[in-house]
Length: 343
Image (tube, rainbow, N blue to C red):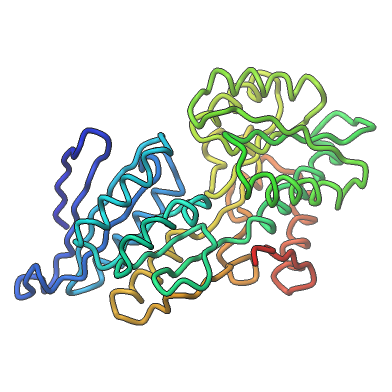
């Protein structure tokens, strides 16, 4: 694999990757060119690391594909500019990106460049012939987090309390957070305790670990025994607070038990790398159905809860693990189904 990294325009980074085998006889003009736009940075962001890894795997398995990765940075106001620049050059057969906010951001780009095709991961955009989108069922994902939080709160792992209270710290508010993740987390908690409450706080950014620790301190002090943290770099502040207070943390989107063994005791995941790889490879082969939107969940094997980890077995009581396994099986079998409700 050959990789070149260089700066462009002062506000984003581009990485070029070509797959190796059988490439010598393929001219550059014949390559299926893929641009990966990361609305943030790759390093330290599990979601975007999985996105890039999925495209890289697809390109590596193809005899005639190339890719570039563009990091758009944390300023959301620049994301549309970055995507417009990529589309305007006419360089890419496919632009791959990932973020629930992308459907709104790409709207103007699609109108201006009607030949440009997009693969939107972790987003819902049905009916546009330029776009194939894949949404992970975050309602199921958040429900699993809430159910686990409830099980832990009613176990011997915490001091008994009359009112069950669990925290949720978000980097920012956005529709999926407010309308899907938060209510599903509460629903999962109340599947264990009908009177359970969620303490919802917003960091206001995706990097301030110090402020996140302050918020987490307040959440633990007012009765939360565990916090689901979806705050980017702020997650480390929540871990620090939990460690100081002998409390617990829940991880989201990627296996996170090793982030702080015994502190991070539960973790959901989405198989963004596998889903991105499969659909990118289909696009390279000319088989991806543009205009379609998919929702992938627990029953499909793309959303889950980490159970096969020795840290989980070591730090979570057997009764909690057994109850969690029963819920996961019910969801896999379709006995418990939470519609993503994005239509």
